Image (cartoon, rainbow, N blue to C red; front, side, top):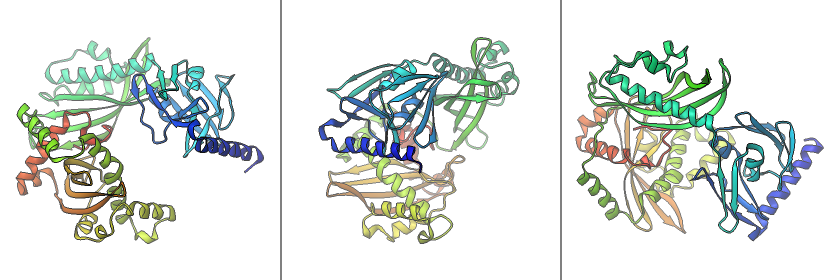
Length: 457
């Protein structure tokens, strides 16, 4: 470690010390970007009248990028604007010109936090703060990104129209580049997917990038569902697609130049709209059986049961015994294992769960819940195959609150199937329950409490 970096490191430690020990001077803050509250794994903080907010997620949510060069050096950019700075220093360089920040960027819990004014000085965003409510408001309209996202949604709309009528070459040219017209999937799908429908088109992420076409491309990731009402094997089959679209500017207009499928997922589960009576009854059942709201239960699954079960399963199914793991991984395993009460370890339910055969990482989603103030009963479903045919596994998990902390107290009723079709044959009641709840959750924003960029049902 050279003297320069040592000085930066010591300065960062001093900054962190101020943040941790200043008491009233350091307070959590909320960031509102384009009207939507940001969620961070490291909270923004207010220090001596300066609000520091996480850099990477904020920049990427604005359509930009961040590069960590090492030794505290960072470059961040959006379109043609970029800024370089060093942890612990107030001076930054924006497109070759120096600018001065009121407070130096800091490294907190392995995340880079920067004063919110960086976004106005470096990227011309509209930024304001209310220190009384600890809120930072950022408004940033990236016109090129908005046009690129709109063009992807327009393409998906045109794609659905192609399933029910002929789409002219000129209509395709309105959304595709000249080269894409002959090689992209859209124009060739009109006959192959006749009678199909597209629903739930969503823009998931976007960023600027380089392609063979040169700089200035915008990579837009979108997901959508194709329904096959007349599929020869599984009528009503759903296929989830997640694709990355490369959008470029051609002759002054943003057009799609290529598309790359990132994830495709099939589901045998029937897709239908629940009647109002069914939906109301399911809502009433939840309210009747639960002390906690759906949002609270889904958050508990996201922060406790899903990561704990996932890591424990992965640790027991890697190529070797737990004791032979690398030290850091082994330490993480024992830390997670402490979230299980002792009587759960090596119980029949634990062993049945560990013995499940899955091809990919398991992600557990809540189907049903019953809860009191100190106990939560969850019925979970997981996909054993992922990225292909839906292969279901079920298990019941009990949580207990002790000393104001939740721990997993029981695993039971573990069952796994080779396919949703096998579930339908072997356990029609459970299949009906899964299909009903799938369609109940499907139309709600929380969607099993998971990020829609990873959809398994």
